[in-house]
Image (cartoon, rainbow, N blue to C red):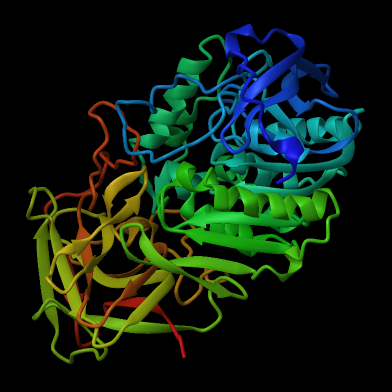
Length: 562
């Protein structure tokens, strides 16, 4: 750290309410470097090609020169930490989030970036803050606007022409989109935990509509901007239950992305950002790309000093041209979880991890166990989908040696329903310690009693895309329904989202098949901050068949550590 970075204790941080439209000389309460003098251009209008204007805030070093730009764009509010209805003392499990007072939600902190000679630009997308227009989240129109702001920033007097995007969640989703358009001045991106398949990753899980976070999130947009024309996302979920052209229009063309990327994914945001972040990394055409995977809380990890320094090294290389050996960074670093916030970091050359062996553990309905060999004796296991505490079955096995499971899992089941023509399956993967107690992990949305991994499937959505499906990751088309005939037994493959966990010798893996959500979460009552699935098709008795011709099994990703 240079002396110029050290803050001046005699300076008083500028109050947010004292910052006016136009040029402001401010003091920012940097967590890393102490109080820092900066220049803030507030509410700058950026003209769009269709005549609209998007408003941005620009925070830059208090000195002459040109600097690379760190940009983020969303519809949450660009001016300060917003008082939104899903954060704060009512929901105390977010973890430590140390930022300056001028850091908007999920955004790069100017208190870190500006002292390191970057310009921070915060974009209010259409329909938010002062940016007028219709708010249509996560689509081509937003991406085109974002690209125009990037090109604008690359040509300003304080810019060296190199723009990098950065941010979490919505701010990562918009990065997948804008990077697929490859604007000229965009030189690198840091999408930190962001979905990209709106159907599979937030509106529906396995074809089952999310009645919790998805709808709560839509209502949150309306509450923030009651005077804006906002897309009816809840109506879209109701009117488009299958993966049709509407949902296809909500997907960025990931293969069109060519820009260098430093991607962060988490084992812990299953049901929102987990799947999409991995797909963004896998499907992009970028030659230079890195993946960091953790099993902890989202924002706490993003703002951790170690993470900030990694982000800075990446941007220093691609936006400043500093030869800092970034290219020697392992392509994939990932946390193997042992216990809650305890584990170790490993490195790999790609994801999925190259030295992965897909290993089948067969369900035995007679012993409720998992076995490396399929039993020849058939069995039928049943549960009542409408009776609480009787709506599940569990299968388990004890590992006879330390075993690392990292990646997707697939659960194949043979099933039938006695009284209806469809079924909703909820699957949980759990770790039990030597004492037979469950080992909990952080989980979406920041809950502390989460499980190893999660999967869902509406049985009528069981059709697979054979071209996209892999042994450990079935890919469902969700384009049509195939209902059950009376007494029909069908095979289904459930996608279980990526995770990374160490099972020590003597510890157990447990597979839960349930007719309702396996982990309910511990959100404050009334706040739908976690996914929920309260509109199921379940009715009566569900049956699972094992052994003999019924090769029901869990396929797990065993990592060869030799």
